[in-house]
Amino acid sequence: MTESSTWTALGNVAFRRLWLANLLSGAAVAAHGTAAFWVLDSLGKSDSTLLLSLMATLSSLPFSLFTLPAGAMADLVDRKWMLCGVSIWQAAIAIGLAVLGVMHLLSPYIVLASAFLFGAGFAFGSPASAAVIAEMVPAKDLPGANNLGGLQMNISGIVGPALGGILIGLIGANSIFALNGMAFLLVLAAILWWKRPRPQSHLPLESFFESFTTAIRYVRYTPGIRIILARNALFSFFISIISALMPVVGLEELHLEPASLGFLFTSMAIGSVISSIFIIPWARSRYSPQRVTTYADSALVLICLLMAIIRWSKMFLVIAALAGVGWTLASTELWIAGQRAMPDWARGRMNATIIMVSQGATALGSAVWGTAAANFGLVSPFLAAAGLSVIAMIVTRLPAFRLSIDFTQDLNLESAPVSIFSNNPARVFGPEEGPLSILTEFQVDADRRDDFFDLTSKVRLIYLRNGAYSWHLKGDLAQPNHFEMEVIVPSWTQHLRQRERMTKDEMEIIHELYSLHRGPDAPEESTSLHLDKEVLARKPRSSD
Image 1 (cartoon, one colour):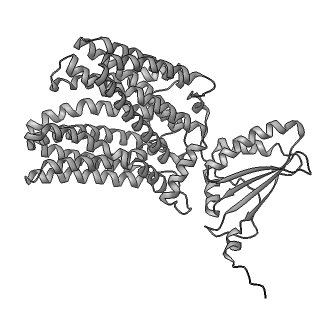
Image 2 (image 1 turned 90 degrees about the horizontal axis):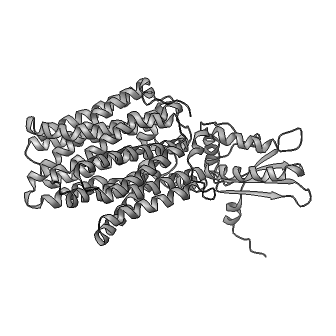
Image 3 (image 1 turned 90 degrees about the vertical axis):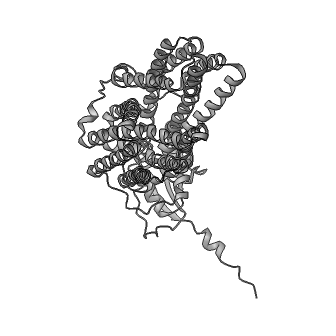
């Protein structure tokens, strides 16, 4: 494995500015959360338990509602300006809450509404933010940048709540809300400072419907993305037992006071920081991504067993820290593998898809483990999770399932927007004119038929995931080993998008297919317009 440094990405000035701004903003957000809980508790004394539980629900609900639309938007508009809009939105909510507090107009419902609006901002910003980091730093620095992002969130998670608790008594909750708003303006400044180098497409924007269908098509015809989604779903399902049942163990088995329960999550955050700074760089320099996740998953199996049997509070804090180490190690490698497996043009939608799948699996896992604990006690779910995790680890290593993430190391998804087809149509098509068929004829040596079919199976997926809605390979009965490949696209604009979306890896496969053509010239190509609509639009003439 090549040497990897967590800190290399900080050499990138734009990333460093954004990382520092996010570090301050993350701590301010966590302090804001502490202040909001305190205000909500003080405003709604009689219903504080219900209100506090609604706070968490309303904060997470927007991720279920808005993540996919946000992913589509992140691929349709300039991500830089989308993040600027999100930062302004968040700053306005925080400062507005501070103003209402100063005017003594806050109520429990306003605080809860602000939690939902904040969640909506984070839901819309998450896919674009992940995509921007992949644009901002070179591919070799992406693992370190992702690691630093996790480190920033963990430091903020440790410092922010404690800072909020101290500042409430010193300057009051309203001042904390205002400081949070100003921190979002720092993030806005860092984003504005960044000069986005990549030119945007000059083609017409896709509609939301087209964007969603494109995302579905890309997942359907890209085996690598399906592997990433499957691995994230499995990991999220099993890891959810820790967040779902660890607080229950703390309150019911360790008899911690509610105020002391935060120490468990602080221990996890400390473990995550240790993992980010020391363990992840060391592991990456020695092992493949698949092996790193296998070791992390093995550690989490052991942690589930320990959580099932250990009931000494101080020892349980150590176990929580180890859970933070394993959780961060596995989740970081899976996220980096996902970033490597998606092209830039689909990054927003694919990030949104990963987030949705992971959150869905987390919600399902939390329900399963919670129901099991309610019916069978706390020990059985942890033991079941450990046993099922071992089975899942074995399954992911079987060749028949091919769920290893090591394939992402060799991908080159850098854009290669060159024409696939050498022919020039006799006339220029209108942007929405179509459907169109692009035909390519091949004459192949008999001893290369198997190679030809192997490559066409890959080429079929390339065309279908990049915009074609149909692909056919036909054999000429009169001429042995003479084949015609037909690619059907819905419009001329979609054909241009397809050419623009091609990556260097995909172009390499297509050129390899073309090299199998026998003859001094390149395969013969032609473009034709489907005229079915004109035929169907004509009324039959009545015979005299």
